[in-house]
Length: 496
Image (cartoon, rainbow, N blue to C red; front, side, top):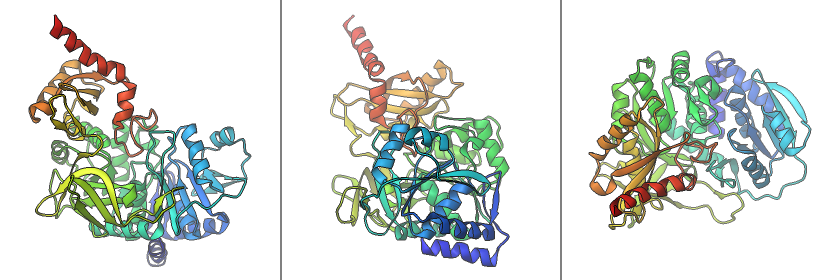
């Protein structure tokens, strides 16, 4: 991370009054940002610092101060349940927790706060943790990110400062970021992708990173989005770049289709976290959203490949960026090397030189990576046909009436789905969307019956990862009875 911190210091000298970070309530110039980083890094005196905070300038300053101090930063997603939070604390053993949710920690840990102070105009509380921790971290670990918010025991991915720096700089250069740019974070900064793409990459380039509390952008916790407030945030901050997950892109497309203005400032919208149907990307572009699909994972320090305006292939996730190398195994699994993680926390062993991603895909003649599904999620129907549910779900999401989908059919004669429809979609519109989607699919991949979900899939209810990817196993468990009924009803009809 030294090169990124050095560039921030350089910007502070050369363009001291240039806005660096803003959250709608507070704006820090590069000079002010540098001073805050220096001030706070001198106060930390900790080896392992956990951040449990909403997005904002304070989060950004503290994260950078931890890096400057040489400590390990442990971002904790605010939407983690108390059980998940307890697991992270027991697993990572931070000696300092910094939060803007002191009452929650006081109730959970039965500790009194050690320090209360203001950071970037936001009150934060420091909790010193008792007891010495045994060192389970690989050497040179700078950040510990947790891969999933869908279980009580998410895995800690250990990343070096060198890997974080390599990916951040590579991404900044790939998108040709400049000091005139303004990024807007619409995902939690505790998500590695947003941390790198929404903070490190723009600050390296001298751009402005807008990091408002997600509630200001219409995010209702992690379970819903207010489209009007989301589009209002785009108008307020006038970003040139965004990072979104497919569900968030879908909300933006529908809002734009309903007449919400799309800022002319936008030049690059990266979408990732799950497969995105080409039809949705093309529709987004017609609405004025310059969307480019990418691919990455925490074990590869976030971004691996990305489509770019001058090198774009819709339907692919683009070519691997310079810091990453990709090859395809004989069974179709995507293997990545380059800027990889150092290992999982608590699992000693050598850092991997090549990582088996668990994703299936292929490289086309131009070197673009195409992701076709998950190795473990692909299933065979009762007729022996192999189906990648990711593929079918991506096609379903291209329909206006469908916001989220999970597809099932292993060992069954046909496929079914659990759907989260658009709030204004009537039953007839959902049926029409399924019918239209099925015309683009071979018969063995089509969805014959479906059930409407009781609520949106989210990290809070355990039905998606922190990045928004649907956890199909969790959905199957939550809707087991309804799914079984979809098959039972047709079987009963067949016997009549």
